Length: 108
Image (cartoon, rainbow, N blue to C red):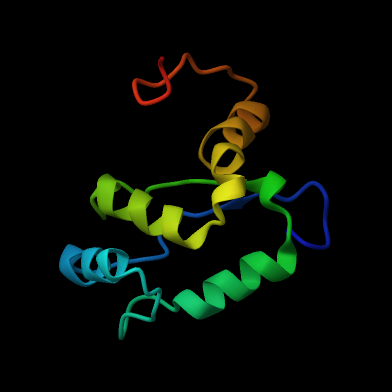
């Protein structure tokens, strides 16, 4: 839908459910791989790449179902680095019509 329809937005919450340890290990190893019974990483990356509409993708943590820090690291590993600012910040600002102040990690 996000590929075909310009008014559709894709929100990325709920893509992983399960214990934090396998997710953290996958991120530490630098090898994105499926985690049996929970996440189909290759299919997710393939779908995002096929759609090619990172200007219509927003991050969602699905908190409190999954710890936000681990889920954020997982999404950072899946989303190409050149799209991080859009996916994790400016797309949401555009979609909801808000402007966020600088986050602590962005302050200089």
